[in-house]
Length: 433
Image (cartoon, rainbow, N blue to C red; front, side):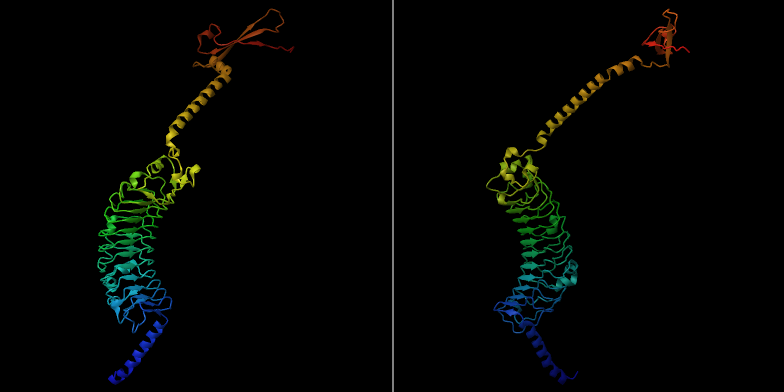
C-alpha cells in the first residue's frame, strides 16, 4: 500500500474509532468516580477515550458481552473495581486486566465460564496476574468441578473473598483452592456438593467464613485444618448426623448455623459447647424429635450459648408438634424406651393369660368327647365288636338284650369274652316278616 494513501486513511480510521467509542460511551452514565454502562446493550468492551483519572469503578453488567478484551484506558491504574456480571462472557483475552495494577474487585458472575476453561494452561494467564485483587466473584457460572491446583498459578496471593456460589459444583478435588493464603471468606453455597474433605481447602490457614449452605451433604467428616474459622454456615443441606467432636478443633469458631437440615435429635458432644468463644448456634427448621434425648438442651441451657430465637419446633411426638422444645418441661421429654419394656412384659402376660383361659375352656367344652376318645383308644390292632345275645325267656324274641363289646383283635380278653372298654344296651325291633 502506498504510504501516502495510508496516511490519508489513518485519520479516517481514528475518527471512526473515536465516533464509535463516543457513541458507545455516550449512553453510559458517568460521574467523578463511576462509569455506569449497565443495561446498555453492549456486545463488546467499548473504547473509552479521555476517561478521567478519578474514575475507579467500571460497571458493564447486564449486557451481551462475549469477549473481554483489553480496556485501553487512559488511566488504567486508577481503576479499583470492575463489574461484568450478567453477560455472555466465555473468553477473556490475554492481558485484559494487566494494566489495572490497583484492581481489587472483579465481578464475573452469571456468565458462561466453565471449570475446564479455568484450569487450562492458556486461560490461567489470560485472566491475568493480579497484584492487589481482594474480591473475585464467579457466582452463577457453570463450573461443574474444580480440579487440582485450579487457583495455584493465577496470582491471587492477595485474594480475601472468593464467591463460587451457584456454580453447579459437584466435586472439590484435593488442593483445588490452594495458594490462597490470605483468603478469609469462601462462599460455596447453592451447589451440588455431597462430600467435603478438609484437604480440598488445604492452605487456607486464614479462612474465617465458610458458607456450605444449600448443598447435598448428608454427613460431615472433618474440618480440622480450618483453625482460623469463625463462622460456618451449613444451612439447608441433608445432614442427619455429624461425626463426633468434628467441631472441637475449631477453637476460634464463634457462630455455627445448622438450620434447615434433617436432624432429629441432638447430643451434647456433637456441638462445641465447651468452647468459651462460640456465642451463636442456630438449630432452627429441623424435624426435631422432642424426647428424652433433647432433655439436656432444656436443662443445661446457659447464657453463654445463644440458640438463635429459641425456635426449635418439635416434629415428633404428635402432641408436641409445632411446639418449641424450650416451652416443654424437662420431665415431659420422655422416650418410648423409658416404658417400652414394661409395656412388653404386660403384653406378654396378657397373651399368656388369654392362652390359659382358652385351653381351660376348650378342655371343659370337649370333656365328654375327649373321654370317649380316651376309652376307645386304639392299642395297635384292628377294632372288633363282640355281640352277645341274652334271651329274656319270654319266648317271643322281642325285647331281647344284646351286649356289644368293643375291643381290639390283639386283646386276649376277646378270647375270654370279657368286656374291656364299654357296653351298651341295644333294643332290637323285630318285624312279623
